[in-house]
Image (cartoon, rainbow, N blue to C red; front, top):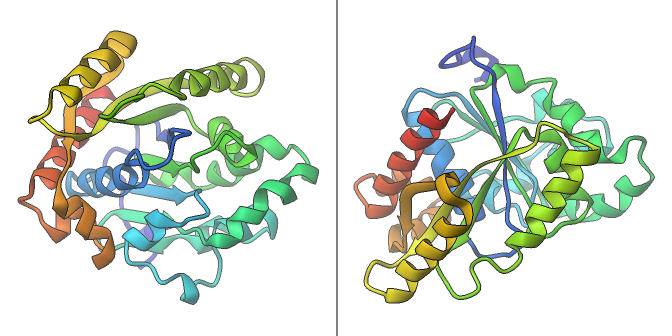
Length: 266
């Protein structure tokens, strides 16, 4: 089924293009991209996820077989493959993915010589963005040229932060990079929100980190806290979002709540 045959939730509303980003790895970035998208799909929103991380965890997490792909985001960026033809269905209705494979790792170097190298991704996404309510770009855990492309393509950032020591380490660097891109390449770029992941209500540390991040970001921090949850960890190995793998689990319930907050925020 083509994504074009699926109607948008609200075609009059401007598409939200959101980069899911944190330069630290292991903070729940791909987990958030997968499960928030799926939860929004459950709420009748049409969502595209652009997997922009060479690890391709979002692609795998939706059960997409990388070996069977005819084209992926690397081919779209550097071989002029049609982005519309690279869009894959997922198990969740109304949610679609532009997949990534390890080939994308070479794109950082190859993009250096490209014309308007910082805006290649934007040019591609803009061709199909109007067909969706939300477009999420799952970014690599670095601040290289791929991430700059994501910052130029996006209208806003969703920053997952893990409830652990040094939670804000690196985030200030990310904010600096965002401000640089905003001043030179994308004047509309803003922070959409900050989501706390791997929250453990039994530990004082988790609560202290939430308080610290709230003091730093204020109302930009979502009220919903994503808990540590075994079902969230298991779901990717089954190629399903947690909303389908274990719909009554704490992780699934949390992402459903987060999706409602996202809709309320815009």
